[in-house]
Image (cartoon, rainbow, N blue to C red; front, side, top):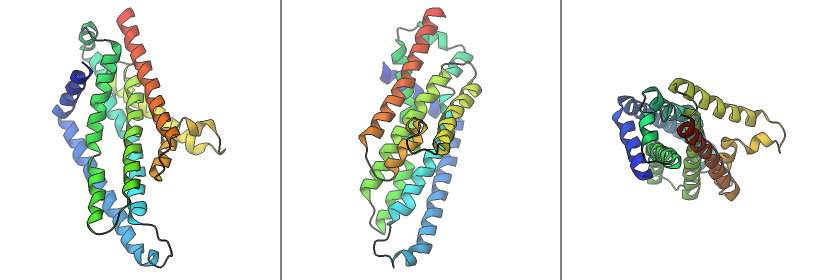
Length: 247
């Protein structure tokens, strides 16, 4: 049942013309940033060649690109999550879903995985662009794989937050603003915390992404993303359960 709901969500996403427009714009942005970083690397390459242990193209091009995309996704994902449940309420189709023989967990997880698959497809162009560098130079496959895994986990955490906020309101725009406010608030709290052991660092998804961005696979960071996403998904399931009981 979760698979069927995920496929339904995927079909509805790809059926919208705005989805294809966003995909086209994002690929243009990704390509522009990739070429800009590559041009900057080529300009400083003669100076880097004089160093004893110069940084490679993966560190100077790929890592900054993934970091920028992580910020872009923080702004973009709420635009997709806002419609998951809030739009169903506004279009008065949510009552039909509640009356179907579906548990709240099936409903939430189906929409979550459907959106996550879509977002994974959306960012597929990034590693494809970066792997073209292998045609002319050696690349750090471990660093690329670490960034791809980290970006996928980060995207899942964004989607979980947006899904929960979407379950709280009937207005998609309010859901988008609310999810963006939560994500940006956690990010600003993280960069504004001066203390090394500040608790704001440990609740910020972008903070935990930095180790992946540096090529460090830390089980603690992976566990954070899993728990962070699970908490917001459980809150969304609880909200759906209350809607079913209290109408």
